[in-house]
Length: 491
Image (tube, rainbow, N blue to C red; front, side, top):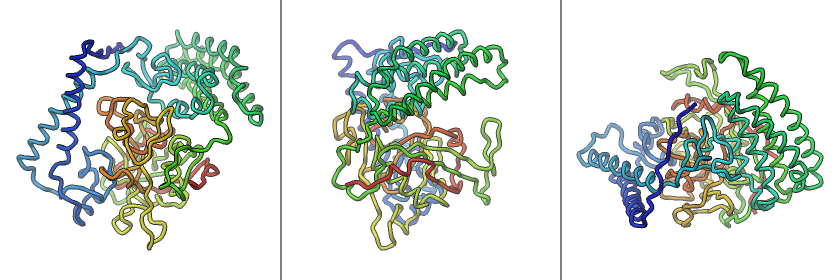
């Protein structure tokens, strides 16, 4: 059994807390300017270098629009630059210490043995993360929690389905780590819960969706005993044999997600859209997009992708774009996919932190132009928040909402978001990045990215390929698999 890790508790005295917060503030607001001081202005040569080798130019920098800034190639490091790096390192250490010192106390139910934590990470339905050992980094679970159910229907009406979701995720978590002594009991509890909550689960569903909702619940009921049988069979297998229980447990998770989506009112339409969004593409719902990427035949690296002892000629992965959370960002991306904009472009940054693409070059001003004589189409920064309308054209810092959790947090591999210029919030156009989650570098709930970029979905299939992509890999195609009917135009 994995060892438990205790989180540092908050200082009890007001003076201690004030010292820690002051230290964090000094570290944060000094570290960020230091990392960008004395950066040369953009030029045609630096932009060309950036497009040809974006990883070297932006290796440690936040996501930004490629071609918008960069440093001159092969510039010798000055004494001042060395001092900056040393100072930044010290301040980063101070910031990390202060974050840990001011962190929320760890609670017993926050710890999880291995794999994605269940939705009830803090013993409360709908919790996203905490200071325990394992944050919820399951993209399917995070997308289910991002649904605007509590906002539209209220906590009491949504509570039963969140309880069902949590119970299924506990089964899934035990199955993933092969805790066969605990998983059967979790399945029994799921069966009892489903029986007791059936009437309450169906109550919020509108009449025209009742039949479909009942069919989903019936399928879940039939899968529960099948999962229990699979667990018994799997417990007798060796580690190198194929397990059956994960498949049925994953099906349970997918089905409860389908049921939850039926709970979103048919009349739902995004709220709080800014005037600047008028006429922009809008996604009212969700869409599934499939990427197919291949190696550059003239490149110097590997010609194939090696993943889980398998060799693949192409990397194929899918992202779910969440228009319920970020209708403008998701709509802008899906519109460009439908236009074939990304087909033939290359992976332009892949540094272990993010995978970025979407820069068509300087001739198009590094963004999407509807026509050669038209200006670049830009969209406002859109930050989706739980329990509130999205923020537009401002970050959570400017809006003073640092304690409000985002709907689409940066805490899973393949979080997809719009790239923008560092100091221009409404500069996003066509460039997107896929985030690679590293809990030590960008801890869930305590990183400097949440609430500062336009996140709009997660990678749910083929996510392992993201860490295999390299600069220069060619995007063969990006296409909408489902959800195109949810596209409309912002009023």
